[in-house]
Amino acid sequence: MQSYSRYFPSDPAASGWGWRILDTGRQQIAPQAKYPDAEHPLSYLFDSNGRRSLDEFQIVFIEAGSGVFESENVSMTKVTSGTALLIFPGEWHRYQPDANTGWRESWVGFRGADATRVMHQFFQSKQAVLKPRHSQEIVELFDRLLHWSQQDIVGRDQIAASHISLILAFLKAESPERTQPQCSDAAIVQAAKAAMLQQLNQRSDLEALAQKLGCSYSRFRFAFKRETGYPPREFENQIRLNRSRDLLLHNHLSVSETADTLGYSSVYYFSRAFKRAFGSSPQQWLKEQSELGMKQNLT
Image 1 (cartoon, one colour):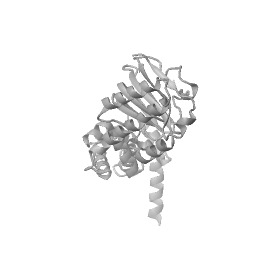
Image 2: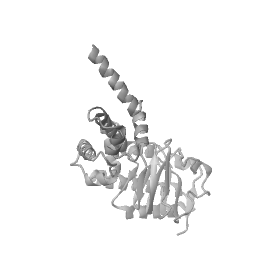
Image 3: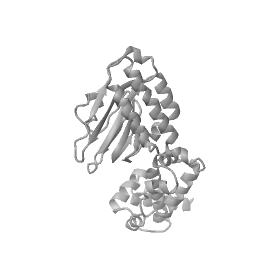
Image 4: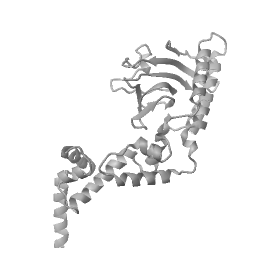
């Protein structure tokens, strides 16, 4: 497949249309290939930390292969074939294909009054990873969008831009979040908490847990953050550390025994996490609790 990309010049006739297409393209990234392609304009390249921030909306659709995505509001998430990534203006993000598989991606960047209204009313940057059921229809829409973007005709930009709202309609109507209306976010989070508490000696497979609870990982993570204030992994780490204080103080386990009981790979990593969470090392915290208990007994 030959890669194609186009960056559109400013068009006064298109600016009042409500949907203005800024850039679009499709590329095949071979396994072990460098990513992204250095031929893109500098403003679209990732920085030395692998991040970038754009002043436009983008839809990136992964047609084949796999990789990862992370943004200001989404933790590192695995991306597979048939996944759509939503990019919001001003929010840092990064994504790349797996070196072992590569991937094929199509994308479109856009702005406009109607585009902004639709994106803010119907989509959220916290749910930027979507897995629509009708991926073939989205691929076909990109085929048509890319076709019209290459035509030298009056109204080309408006014709190409008209496909963006259709792609978004498929993403909104067909996203997995809409297939589980009977299961509330609160119920999902309550069940996830129970599962985490049952196996504090090991890290949960969060994607598998979300699947077991009948929802997508993007919905699972969004629900968890909204209900608890924490992403699921951070919440799990916090309850493990809270449990460690019980084991140290009431079960009288040593620091080493506590780290082992809770599945930490070493005492060093446990102590570092404990101090980051509570401001003192486990030994210092135990000493403080002992001194506090002595003062209370004296009074």
